[in-house]
Amino acid sequence: MQKMFNAMKRGFLAVAAVTVIFSSFQGPAPASAAPRWSNPNMTKEAREVLKYLYNQSGKGILSGQHNYVDAPNDWSNKAAEITGEYPAVWGNDFAWGEVSSMRQSVVDAAIDAWNHGSLVTLSWHAEKPDAPDNAGWWDVQSWYTDEEMLEVVTPGTEKYKQWEKKADEIAGYLGQLQAAGVPVIWRPYHENNAGFFWWGGRPELVKRLWANLYDRFTKVHHLNNLIWNYNTASYNEWSLPVDDFYPGDRYVDMVSVDIYDAFKQSYYEDTLRIANGKPIAIGECGTLPDIELIQTAQPLYTYFLGWGNMLTGSNSYEHINDVYDHPYTTNKDEVKRSVFK
Image (cartoon, rainbow, N blue to C red; front, side, top):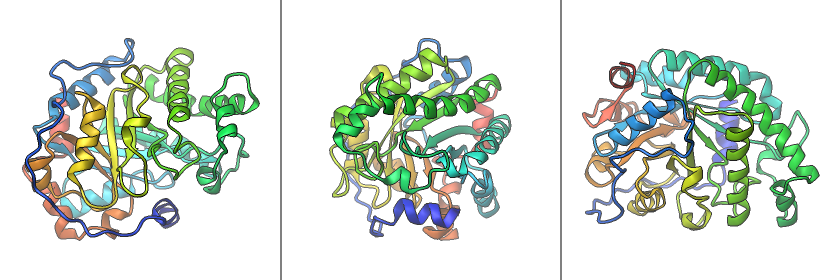
């Protein structure tokens, strides 16, 4: 599963050497001193996490690690084995139909991670709404025409009803987390400013899709434990300008960017600009960031999330240790002392 997921997700990207360009940054203001949340009914636990991210901005970066649906803790455990420190952020994914039987184990692991002092982030590599229940990776990456995508976001159509059904299934798992008191940094429909997945590449349709999911989860399912993390692909030759896809502040609590090449200053500035004072993060990365670069030139990233087995596939043990040991990096034990008072 790990090698398959990684190869499929990133097979279309060339491996780029990470180059570092230090520059003074004159751009958008840092995260606001007064936290804002999109959902007025957000749970106390979710508000506390979001307030912590606001406060963290400019003071340090949280370590984070993604895990795979079939092995919900393996790569966080690997990071701890290498460094002696557990990541501050535990990540996983609800994935697609053919592995849906493993979703409950993700929920159980998320509860355990939170109870042991990690922040929790979840994404969803959703299959197309009209895909079968046993949908595979192809149904995540295959394309809809503009007309088909319009059906997905238009209430009353057959594709919209199919979308509702699949979204409602995920809402059930998130509801379990709410009942357990677990806040979730929720990152659906990620990298939507690119054509990597069926939901991406068309600004107005992306905005409607995001708003539909937000409204269904908050107004129908009353999921108030979600911190809505709007995520983009880094703007380069494989993607489109990030500003065109942003759904609006009323639907977003924070913004993140996925980076699989250099940690360019332009990616940081793009993310800060659309966040407009909300917290920002590195939603996915293969090579872990140079923390000296982060501290010096990109200090407002609140966390990074290393992607699965790229932890060891794209990083030397020396670099992993350098990242986790850096004074600017915050690991799980420090989060426990700050958030779990």
